[in-house]
Amino acid sequence: MDAVRTCVGCRTRAPRSSLLRVVQVDGVLVPDERAVLPGRGAWVHESVPCVDAALRRRAFVRALRVSGPLDTQTIEKRLNGYGHKVNGSK
Image (spheres, helix red, strand yellow):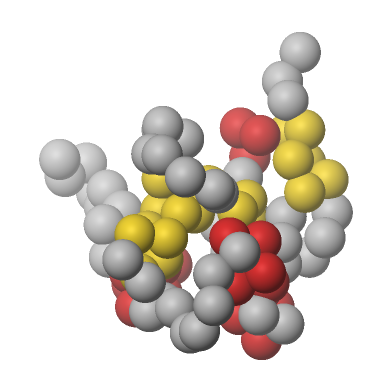
């Protein structure tokens, strides 16, 4: 049985395998593909609407228990196709 987590964007519960774990490293939101990076993590659907909702509501800041703003460029690049395998590339 797969563990269940709540998406910080849309607030729906989903299997852990369908969500992306995000951690904060030196003030930068970093996607944690294998869910092994140390520290607190926030779970979000890998979709633009969920990430936008989480950013708008400051859900990442609350879930990760950090003070101040987070650099979200890394997660935004990932959602825009940067870092995804395209047409069989490695």
